[in-house]
Length: 396
Image (tube, rainbow, N blue to C red; front, side, top):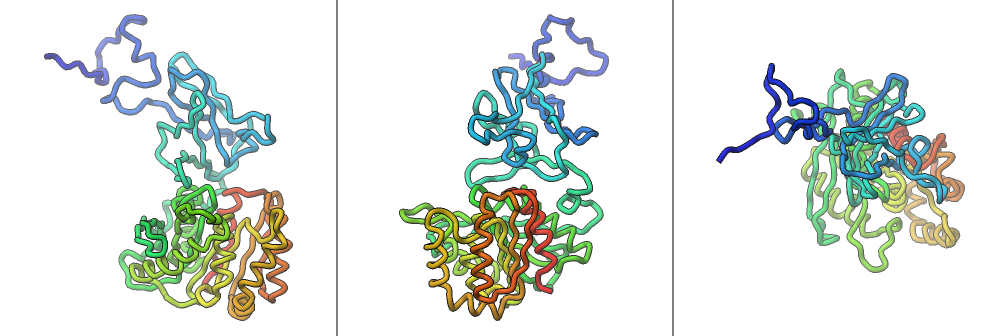
């Protein structure tokens, strides 16, 4: 039996005349399995800063680019009734493309394609970011304003490990990502530790895959602006159960303090003292930090709260009263022991109204803090910059 393979055409071979057996060649799918991937650039940063997206989908009827990270460039449907996504145009080969109307600022972004209503990660992609469930493609646009969070070939690089551990508290296997600084693998030095928590839609993968925390630390350490440190990025979600609260989550706190921290201190060369531990988080991770870090100066002397606060919603006053009643002694102790409490919020953040009551509690208890009010809202653009501002203040 003869086996016919779609192999790349040898040099000097004749192509079939147009219209005679040229179907596969006319498709953006390429020349078959052994010819390698289709030859198009799925994300291209243009000289003027705009970005062109491409995806091969010959059988699709409607394709869009969708992203939650750049609403000013790719619409997200807010307010309700407004468009969702950037519409793409199909060429004769089945290749769809679209170019943003304006430049995309130098940074890192998540996106996917929407193909006939289905969310599809970039088939030509090589970088990804996990959410709580599902996955995003990512792309980076380069430029001076984004240099602090990009990979640089001229600096030493740390490593990011994926750590699985058993949580006796939760009765479940858990996962964390752990950054170790340059030189850790071949050394004997012990390091301080930052526990850094993601937000409600994300996972323990997020602070590196889209937050670029490892590159931010590499660049800061190389510049002598931050102390070398281990960064532990836990999974902020816990198994669902009746009555569980995503923000006021004792399950997360118990797992962090009773299971993850002992695992890290057993398996990594950590300095196990309060003055060598920090905790920070964004959004939901900020709530975890307020409830499990700000109340534990016995464990952490450095605290970072990004884009989160106390006292929001219809029961704001009740939240504030309950938090203070439950943690009165711990907050009084923290006022004496914390070396840094760092609080950051964007002016356009939908949680900005929580700043005043949260700072009110800090002031009431005499907890000195650094407040960074930035432009922008509840976005990774801000959170990367908060980390870059926060990390140099640690363990000094």
